[in-house]
Length: 273
Image: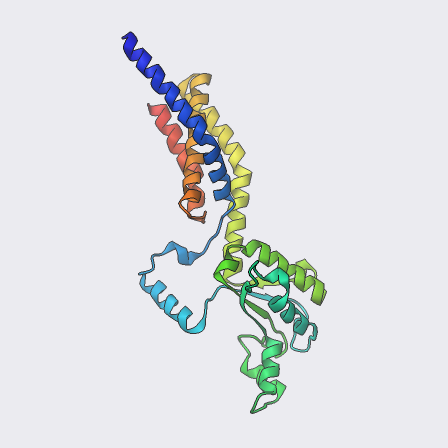
């Protein structure tokens, strides 16, 4: 009996050594995983999914659909500052990678396209050019337009920062305050999901941890046992998040439920054992 207790004590000490040694890596991985929240519905389906195959074929022919569409009151084909804005979005260093490559595949606006059609090899009037682009780059009034910015794969990894820079550039060049800017498109959709998920997690993480700890103590009838089970659940939660980082993946709207799910399962297992 004494030998069994001694063996269990050695195993417990060895387990604690492993836990302490792995803790820095687990904490670092968990923090990094929570900083890489990136949502794209395309990533939720396999490459051989029929609709995904059709989309990939369209991308090869026409380019990716990861765009930001920006407009605001006064963004018309008669606004000359759009020329400077488009030029800055294409050439400014803040929209380039460290190797000099552009973050954006393309930047275009209705004013530029109307000018190209009106001044092309077979010129047409500005009104006819605007009419041809109505419903895409031109609004129903024949004047309202937009700026379309196509993101590269590397830009999608930094979309939050780049969207902020785009808004700052619009504010600086076109003198449009942030509250009057209207941004849309798949990039904005994914970013909005990211921000909403992160905000919910930040707001509910601490209350959830307190509630789980209280329930564990109540169900086990012991403060020591409850804190032990809750602590193990937090460790499992962090370890699972670190696996997301070290496996090269990023958090998404699907994986955002992973931390509370693992926490609840760990506590439930601890209570039943």
